[in-house]
Amino acid sequence: MVEQTPGDGSSRLKGVNVVKPIVYGTISRSFGAKREEDGHTHTWMCYVRPYVNEDMKHWVKKVQFKLHESYTNQIRIFTEPPYEVKETGWGEFEIVIKIFFNDPMERPVTIYHLLKLFNLTDPDIMQGRKPLISENYDEIIFQEPTSNFYKILNDSVNKPHDPTVKVWQHENDYEALKVKTVKTLTEAKINIKQDIQTMNDNVKVTKEAIEEMQRKIALLEGDTAELTVDPE
Image (tube, rainbow, N blue to C red; front, side, top):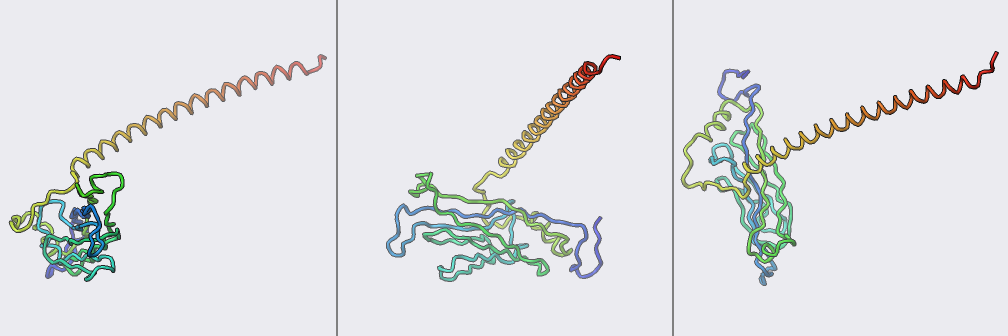
């Protein structure tokens, strides 16, 4: 049941959660050789994107990327999509991504993502013939948002897509991954049930064998007791 106190739209909606799925990650590509002027070996990009093709600027105020301290202008801030930073470099490091929202009552969300540049098992990636992709799916959950922000969160999906904003095609097929994961979990559940049943059957057989052994021991002990009794 939704409980709302009448007012200016800043009251929170009790019992209401809104989920916003996002995709974030890095794409890097090797130059194939070290660049002479600065020793950099790769070009790379770090990004935050909506999982569904909506314009995040309706509910996102800004996205901040904190890079390694060796970079000039270590903090990069984007107030409009695409939320992505492009750079070159030679080493891997953790990028701190911070997402701020248009409702000041909502706390920013912080994400930590490792920039990956090297894959020593794939020659095509090592030579720059194909990129190295490290992408993740996640969900931002707004618990009991204000009534105004709740409307913004829901309306953003239904608004006509801004033609200036790219329609994203994610690097990973998450729907296929979801189907595969559900199938794997279902099969695992069946296998666990079968294993439990087999274990229960084995326990039952072992218990019956122990009981039979105890019965035989009791009979043997009874026979021995009769043999040791002196005749009257």
